[in-house]
Image 1 (spheres, rainbow, N blue to C red):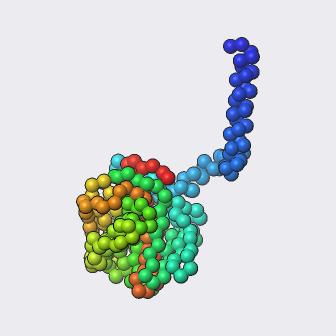
Image 2: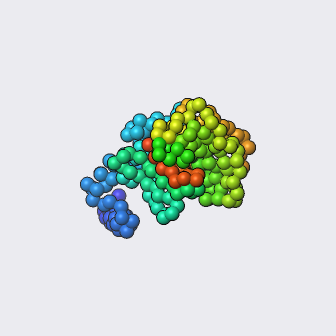
Image 3: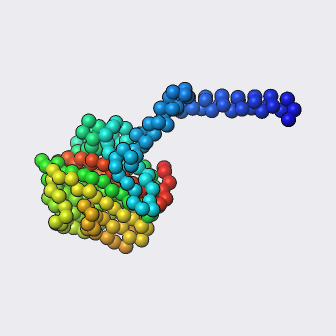
Length: 248
């Protein structure tokens, strides 16, 4: 290859590298070797990993998001709306806490639109002082007016609702189940969506299923809510497994 072509190629690579560095700095991304090395070394801690939480993906699934809330920073938001709710990670306690005022519901999502099949699971504790409160999983979330809600309260009962265009429909009224733990004790909740059937379970037991799916694929997440009295719900961990999923 002639020398002039080598020089031209080298100059082109230098220009591209310079442009990439400028673009990275504009985005706030790390550019020094030490920072870049730390950025990738800490990737599992920032996004959550099955190695750090002990949560293992089911056979045939991959892990999209997982966290045990043991460190600040999460795929889930920290937010407060006075008089309604306060949600966020408490890393010193290793929980994601949802505090809601009477008759309020708050939910959060890792922000991915999932195409079935998928599994969402989380371990939650309704505070012993607020047994009428409930922990929940949400699925097929299109927007705040369209989603499924799978809830368990602190009194050993579960409920399944769907909200369509802002109107609530009861698929399963509050129903007592011996598999559910009371307030102050953890319940592990699971929603499986294979595209044709939605299944809801707790503590390795199926509680509800339906093949009359009224909403399209959407986001999934965790939720907490209150009835007549305020409620506090702590999530110890959550995990989302998919085949496949596209991030938003």
